[in-house]
Length: 198
Image (cartoon, rainbow, N blue to C red):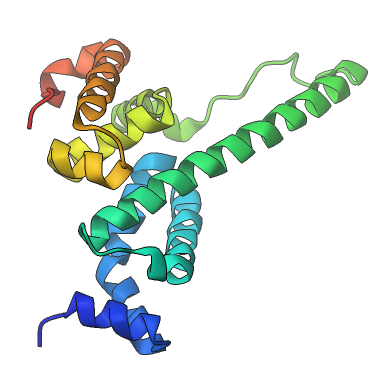
């Protein structure tokens, strides 16, 4: 029996818990992988995906159904990710200030050198770290557009709909993202095949 999304949405609105679980089951993989691409780590991605489905449940009445549910969920994922990053940045700034104060009050045991993580010594791990760092160096919107286009294979029109922005804005963000990534990952460029296309 094929999954009837519209019916599951209506039943969830009517308070059917099983219909909600079916919706989550149907979309959880895509939401999780988008969250992973946006956050760069498994723990944050799981937290974000969970928040997305809580938000979906609480906001399902506002879903008009004029676009795909998956596009609406992508928009929620990106917006929640941006909000979480802002909060994290503020907390990080406070922690940094506290740490700087504490560090100036005590001598550093190893002379201030950061120990290298032995896992990062292999070429493949280094390459993955470079790619993750490069992605994290993009603005939240640039990263969202890049991930939706190159990891999720969404057409520009659907990305525009998902993020509630003009298609021209999507093209501009994608162009900037690719330019930045080409600079950051110049030694991998021939393998990436990055381009702005429909």
